[in-house]
Length: 121
Image 1 (cartoon, rainbow, N blue to C red):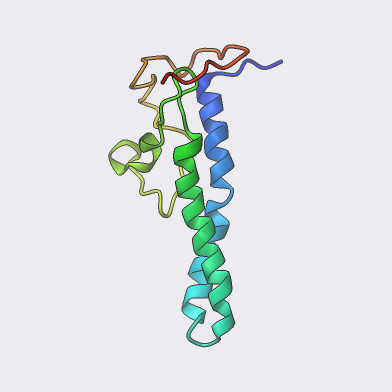
Image 2 (cartoon, rainbow, N blue to C red):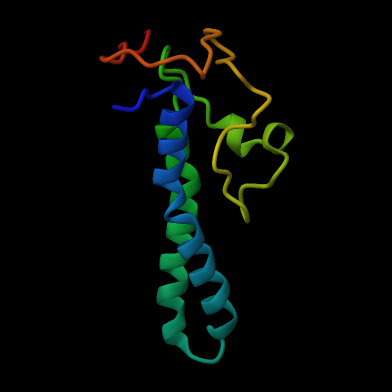
């Protein structure tokens, strides 16, 4: 059995949100210019916008520190940390130079406990 680290769990949370990003972006960018020519392209365009937005918004609910439960989504969505605008490119992981949680200073390379801790109130 593989040992799961905190960074592995974060990658898994990002991958869960990432699968909606590219299809939503492609659907929006293809259908939006075609809407003036044929009105039925409005529906797939709206679906694409919803998928695209959902992939970014859901990240704030899913990307949490495995140790303390604080939200870490700003490490991926804020361009000053990730160096890439999330609108067009969805990152695979949090930046490599960030090695620990900014709140509890738990290292992401540490092994996870078998049962996760409840978030602190």
